[in-house]
Length: 402
Image (cartoon, rainbow, N blue to C red):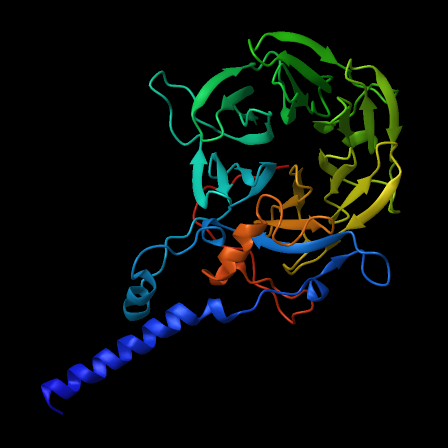
């Protein structure tokens, strides 16, 4: 074969590869809403669609590098992937998803509208502050500032939404075993859960001035009565200012008003709907409905503000898939109503969209459409697939998060 003929063959091959790289995922039509996994299933009226799953940075980052797809097709090079090791707490606002990962000693940030990924807490600032050790609770105020409850430092660390360290407060004399956190929208009050332990009476909510970091007082103490706690797990604040606490060892959720006065309780130990076995994190949507993750059930249950069960989503499973859970832990609801659920074992975040929010609406809808045209990772695994991928194996220190 002549040199000119060889060159022609190479050019044809490159053109073919380039065409495949440009036309692969883009040819996959987005799912119609009628084909999506819906909750509750038919014939009941649908309320939520399963929308997508996130397991790492490549699930939200488009491949924007010029010529990158072609080069990787020719060389076998892969894009750099960073996924979860053992995620736990989660917070979401305006399409930015913050996930605490204890083995990574940081908060992983998935900025879907901005199509950016970064980590918070890996480095100290010039004064030696801001490095995260074991993030256990996350929340965000209306200014977009992130509050991280660190179980090893026994502190609350505050950052801007883009990761700039602002301040920290608390210590081991105030927080014995930190577990969850909530902040008022204006940032003036921070509620930090102290889970205590079998040998401790420190089962309480520690209240701080969110601006100065000053300790104000404790809410509750160990016990089984109204306003008392046994192994509290998490706390959240409703739009009307009501405070909800997951009282794990008492298998219930307790509700307080904005002035911290006890109001009511819902839930009990059991295996039936509306009961709890191993409740973990809690969240509230813009309508005031309450979402509680239960690790033993492998689901999250939704209650109205009066504590009446509305529905449950998810089931325990040894194989990953939409709404399939082995160790669900964290939950958050964005202000467009999308629900974000963390599973530690599968190392993922499942996203559910309320039927009232259009597929291309809210904070991440338009990105989903763009991502479907740019990356293979937005494909949704069918729930009835014969086999599911095993949890991602990622190098990093192993830390058990309970």
